[in-house]
Length: 254
Length: 317
Image (cartoon, rainbow over all chains, first blue to last red; front, top):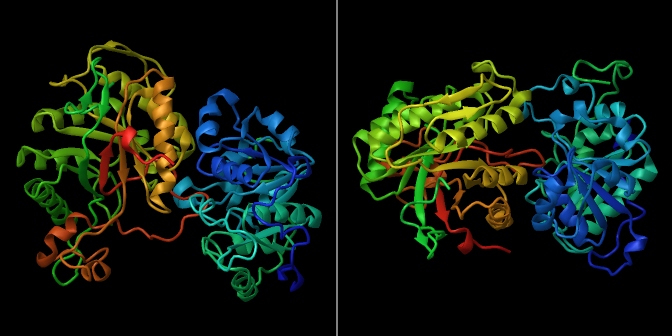
């Protein structure tokens, strides 16, 4: 169980923040959610040079003004279109809406899980109450056809833009990037690096539990070395005593 | 439409173009402590808040707000009653909720209570509608938090109808329909100012503009400058919906004390003492000020301290 907490250097990151790269060479990013978090991520991604679309469950006309003012350059789309035209989908919806999110919408896609479970604010969600599993493990179980990567959940949405720094800045903040699919983690780590953060890959969603609320790196601005040390010092998550339950608790409409 | 203060600067068509800067304080009614730091009773805490409101009026504060809460730490479920007590002993300061948790309340009752406060205070009542930072009112009044969005959407729309004055005809999913219903007491000087408290959800900003409510930004973390685009979004949304200009308010946590050293030592419970009496006016809510990642200050939080300023004068980066 030690391996899953090992951090490794990303193989795709390290490009300078403002490096001029033709948009064609960059991945396309679709942000699902136009609440607190979605427009902030969209704006950061646009600034980093990505082609970005943003969508909610409804008509893109409803978020046109939000996109125009808060994330200029991000294209408002219907959700299906945003996903279709993206290489990486960022799921930035309130976690309590996840139970009604259609898994087929993001099948076969790399999906960034930027969500957190906040019972005191959002209320208890039965699906995420089994604390043997990280919230992204539950997300991955439900989105079983997608490649889930956990990141962007651990930084305040109001900090995401302010704390971006070019590669090599002494105060460049590190963000954990966790997933079971190494290629997906590397792809997302590249985006994190380009947006302006040091990406610290974690080899599994299970290991990504260290990124959750209450964990040692959650909401804490740490540089890479500090971040890696904090992750190493964190208590190891025991392997679950039993495999993931095949049927999810109530709240799952599927 | 409903919330432009009467002393706003207006253009030749009567459109408000600039709003006065208003400085206010608000409180959650934190359980106070005595001189030795021992917690005082709920009853004494409520009486203390009345005194704070009266003192705020005397020292020139423009607005005093009370955030609805239902907990042992914040025994303040009936802010309107407390505000009424303050109203009876003052004649200048504006008095409002900060916030009223409308989703778990009845819009008609909220309108009635605040139009009653408006009558008692001679037109000094205001309401900030929101969700609040905690969720205890939902189980307490038998609501499901999962219905929050639907409840808030419907109840704010009904509240907007009530504010127009005159008989109300309204239909929704969360309560019985109203047909040509007269709701009393009628307000004396037109609708009282009504705001929607927004913690960071742009869709809540849009809703406030659509319904013609003013915008109160609840800044509880991060750089305040980060919120400037919300003011811009609000202004543009008002234009899109054909609404007149409306003021934008900013809430910021704070702590005022007699000396620079005192705030660091006297935050939270037990901060009340006779020597720091004015300090307690602005006792910041005793909530953790830890960083609040992705899902923090959901929209419509309670607030403590605010400014109203013209959207046109707000920094817009």
